[in-house]
Image 1 (cartoon, rainbow, N blue to C red):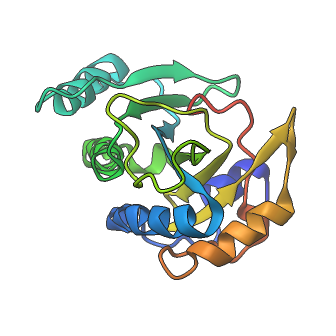
Image 2 (tube, helix red, strand yellow):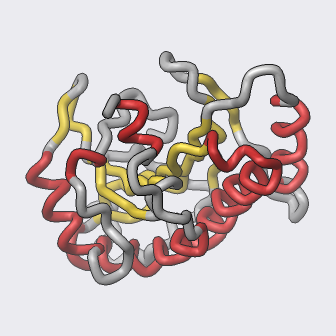
Length: 203
């Protein structure tokens, strides 16, 4: 089984349940109290655009939905592996999760479900000056992420990713975060599927 098979979850696929994303706010409360981490205000959806199909039209539709209630459109980029990212921001974690759910659903409803890889939520340290700050980051605030929660679309599972440097990660910290969110999220049991996502545009 190749690397692409691993991240796409081509062996024993589990039907994705996008509503699982709505468990993230609860997990964020746990992470704030137990690990001093809050949502950074940034999240991204990663997919492999089908060749020869209406990528620009799809992006226009996603932006239309994201801006319906005065929200900001997503920022689209392409990484070095040719995967496209739609990055959204919102200081309210529940609104942020709703926005990435909307992006995932739009792509899936358009028949691009097989192209969806993962969604990523950025996590940042709780500011030292505000030890009792709420989970919701202040209006318009976006912090630099030091850790991430990754949702694997094909697996319907989550895993923590903690990069520490150029193509380096802290497995010990990832396992600690796994134990903290296990009651809130369906965590991926197969550690081989905890794929490292270097140079994330969500950071």
